[in-house]
Length: 106
Image 1 (cartoon, rainbow, N blue to C red):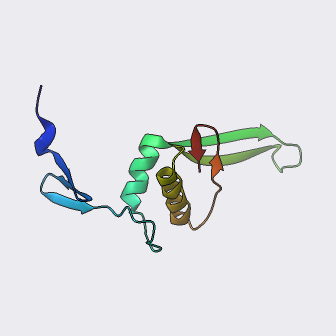
Image 2: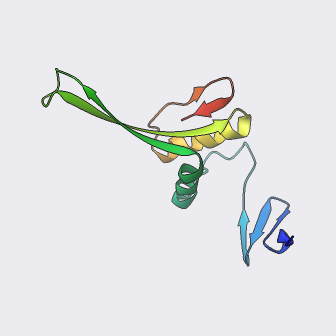
């Protein structure tokens, strides 16, 4: 089995990956945290879903309505809830966060 310790090392809130250092803040005090668009892309790829729904609706011009829904699902814990709040702020406050027994959903 190959030793992966050379790929990343966790040390004092820094993650070293292939000659790059990324520092992540775990402080609750920071108000102006902005997510990197590539992070949101990766989160969507791993934990997100995109739904397109078409329904019959006689009140619409063509007899049906189309809705688009984007979801990110995370396990229930305070850090994941904070992450979903950051995702919501990334999208300028659009959307709602729902808490269920086992998951938080934005």
